[in-house]
Image 1 (cartoon, one colour):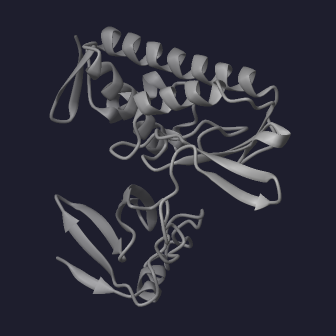
Image 2: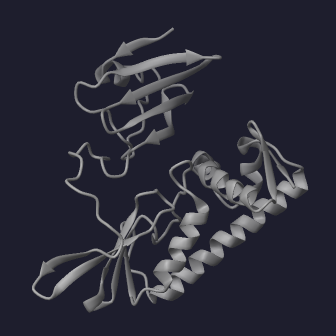
Image 3: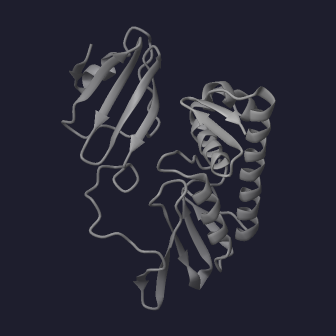
Length: 250
């Protein structure tokens, strides 16, 4: 049964269990935007939307929300007005006399992700593409592992010494940090391929405990998104195949 509720009703749904929906910086519905609850095959979903963000949360445990999918969330994440124009790769943005930021298009984490290079000080503002303390989630369909790795190679060729990420402390030396990240992603991909061959295939839910056995189970929902990105990359090179929800080695 579908019914629309306001945000107060959605919060009230957590009462009685002693715990409401977690607040972790996830996208929120814009003011006066209805939130809808629905049920399908015994699973309850919470839907939210705005002119710029649309998504759905699946209620896996009582009153506990898991973000399943969010579209169009990068440039309009905080419900800001759409940008006046789109920055172009290699465009320069003057910030003072003789000082400019150069735009580097880095798809992968998101199709429209950009990094900024301050050439005068050899600094890279890496946004969410390179982080310190955690790895970036590559979330298909907007995220793509091929693009992510290619963008890392592009950044590794930039004339920079230090990386200033959106999360975490400064990274240096810059090229070494990016080479380490590329090696980590390729090692994970090799592990995914090995798991696929060893267990004979399965769904994301079945594969993630093996492919990400070094990750806390609480992070499996997020790890599944990057797992999907790795599997899609393996599919492109003929090392994996997909049949509906199931993946198999080739």
